[in-house]
Length: 79
Image (cartoon, rainbow, N blue to C red):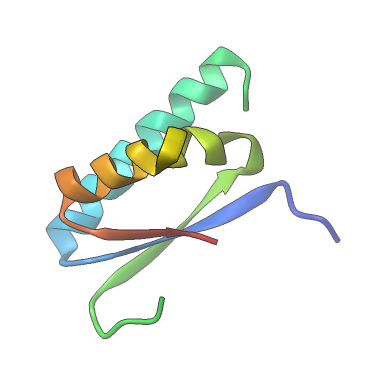
């Protein structure tokens, strides 16, 4: 079965993960309003986001993804 969501793996310390999750959810919520709908020993969280929002999380030349990582202190992988 084809899924309309993609997994986003966020790794880092708990506070960084919380920040990254909030930032990603804000991006996804903004996309939804616009109608566009790793393996590590560190703590991690996998967030399911709509396939149509993947571009907003990654951004042009991965700039949004790089900024999310820099601001949150997490490593973020879009699967």
